[in-house]
Image (tube, rainbow, N blue to C red):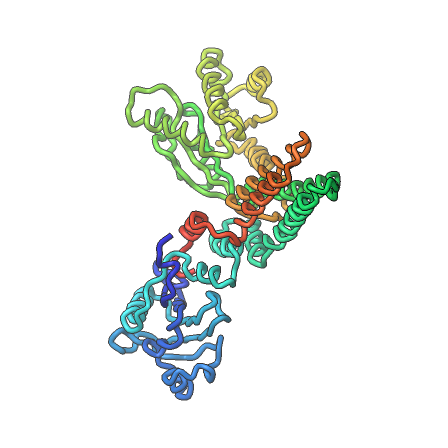
Length: 483
């Protein structure tokens, strides 16, 4: 990580962003000189409060109270009529002395005040997420709560929002602390057995040990399964539209989006680049990608479009294979169509597939159903018409059913991000080694304890109780400046 994150200087940034005009803009100043230097860029309207600030009589200044003030430029000119609040350490977001200046939300004003603060106090502009990093460093938040702050800001679904709020309250820590305590007890029982090993006295009940170990494994496994089942509803689903030229991909894409985002034409190869859009389907966020028609072509640009279509399949969680019903009903078209179905299926691997037989108004429904039955596509096919709307509701319901069952919406996951999942999976792997060794008769106490400790280290990465610069870099690089 940048060495600035570990410095003890004073920092400043906009908490509301510098790229959007709004009614209010808020600047944050945090660090050892935040209170001391506040009088260099704000002049309180209250004479008593101004005198206390100028003489650094901070005990007489009301904390978490908005004082009206003149906000000053680097040349001591009045820039704005604003409000300022003071948060002495440790009772602030960052755990340090902190000042918040509330301005009118013109980015120009905010930039001028930031310039004034940097010039007149020696503070420096904050790095990404540096206020939250200081909160983590000062014990105000653990790492899972820091991640929850970012998730709360960037959540795009109500379930994602709920999960972030839950974690911000310390839910992840409440989940892992009892597990860590159980693992400590398992290690203690191994060490006790080791202490008595030279006296030929067996103090460890291996049956009870395995039972406790399985309990921990079960809780970790349940948390991972919960996250995997609810993740699409929390974070959204990537959906790609693929198919042969003129299958109606772009028309179907536009219908689902609700506007003419993709160009529709009878000319084959019209779509050459990937068109992206987001929609909500009864609360389920779908990230849609319309791709170029897949066929052999000598056109260099269209060929690149086909290449991108194939790449899009790899990046998708759901692939809608759009098929022209009229083409599916023609014997002469069977070979290239079946080749497409085979290629997409192979490239999709474990990804979910829905075969969308489009333009049914131009085809024979009985023939299409026979085609679907003959090629084992019954369970994941839908017959639609983008023109008349036939089958579109069925398609939407099928998409939802692939990712969100009604009972899943009641799940309150213990973890809420991929990094936390990976840490739990790593811990499960180490505990599986312990379990396998015991079952095969390998009961070397020191080796078993090493693997359990490794599991504890992995779990500790959720809260950040064991520092890892790589983990911190990954998390805070995603933050916005000012948070």
